[in-house]
Length: 294
Image (tube, rainbow, N blue to C red; front, side):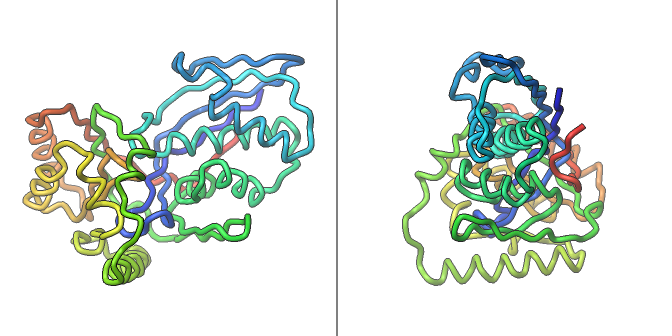
C-alpha cells in the first residue's frame, strides 16, 4: 500500500489573491492499493463515497496522463483538514490522489507535471503549490504549466492562530461574491501590499501587519459571508494581534502574533466563546516539506 500525507494550506495571505499560499501542520493521510477490478473508498463521509470523489477523480486523471489503463483501486483516508473551511481540503485530495497514483505506477510523472495536473483540476495554483512544496509559495499558471517559487525565511518566528468556525462557506459561493472588474487604485493597492508582504517575510518583520494584509480584491466581499468577522477583527486589533487574514475562501480566519503571548490568546478564546457561532482557536505551525510518501 502507498501512504501519502498532505498538509492543509492557507491561500491568498491577504493581498496575494490566487498567487500566494502557505502549508500548515494539519494533515490528511491517504492510502492507495491497486485492485484488479473495481473501486473501494474507505473513511470518507458517505456523500463522498462515489465516482465524484475528488481523490478518485485525481487518480483517474493521473492514469490518463501517464497513458495507463485504470483497473481498480482501494482508497482510504484519515481526515485532519476540515472541509469547506478555507484550509485547502480540496487541494489536499487532489494532491494526494495524484501523488498516490503516480507512486503506484512507479513515478512516470515529474513533480512539475504533477503540479500542472493539480492546477488543471483545481483551477488555480495558490493551494496546490504549497501542498506540494511546503512553506510559503508564490505561483502563477501560464500556457499549461505552473511557475512557482518557495519563499524561505525563519518560519518558526511566524506564529499563526487559525480561527475555525462551525459553519462552511463553499469556494463556489465565495467566488460568486467577487466583482468582475476592479478600479485601478484597488489593483495598485494589492500589488504594492503583496510586494511589501513578501519583503516583510524575508526580512523577518512580522509586527503590525494589519495594513499590509488588507486588500481590496476579495476580503471586503468574502468577509460578509463570515458571521462575526467585523467583531472578531475589532477585538484582535484591541488585543494587539499583529495581523489577520481570511484563509483561502474562508470562513477560517488566520491571526498572526510576532511573539508568544498567552494572555492575548486566552483573551481571544474568551471572546470567541461569547460569539453566536462556535469558533475553535488552534495554533498552527508552518509545514516545511509539503506532500510526503511514507
